[in-house]
Image 1: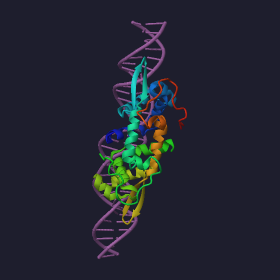
Image 2: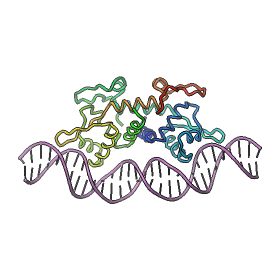
Image 3: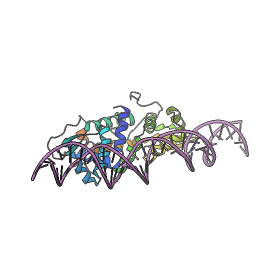
Image 4: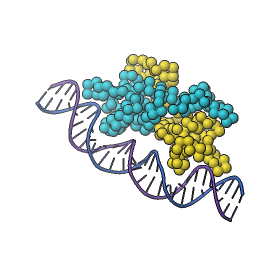
Length: 119
Length: 119
DNA sequence: CCAATATTTCCATATTCGTCGAAATATGGA
DNA sequence: TCCATATTTCGACGAATATGGAAATATTGG
């Protein structure tokens, strides 16, 4: 995942209503949920939600498909995985360092992971 | 990590200059880097960078300490780990589902992870 | 104390963001 | 076709963001 894509995904998730909507979709699984159901559950007017879904869609975090009169939104799990990968690689000193424990790291000044590609 | 903290961390990272600055700090390790060095490297005026560091600091993503005339900023790896944990738990259908593969999931309509705590 | 260095605070500005009323569009059913 | 339902598009608004010039603050060395 490129930096610009990670930036888009982070920005998309960094908003209350969007994070809530996205989490509902994640729990709903690949089946997805109709827009109206989410609007009702979150107490957000449908047009406002459309705005937020656009953001999530442009960040490749959700997909849409029409089912009758309803628009069914579903989470794109692959993108979240890519984002996690990006954050682990680029923003956590490498998975090996961060994944297991609260990040033990060397005390010397040599960068611990030259291997991490910096774009 | 609470939802509000995750939101703050996501918002803090969802900006070009801040993401760059944070990544520099991650690579620098616990030793950290002086503000001026980062300002020069990124080509951002020092006062603008102060603004961004404030955001990162309020999101608990970095710490500061004074060393002579310089302010040394350092990444807080623990917070990034918490964020990754939050995203995995709440936004990826549970680590067990997402970590290994591009998220294979059941086709039935039963929510796959009732266990995931929703705050 | 004074000058130089490093960073922050204050302030103004342009841009982007989140929100929602109102109208428009799409679909299914009688 | 006409109506009800579901969602989007349009337009406007206040709030929050990102930016940087200018001045203020803190620290070191002479």
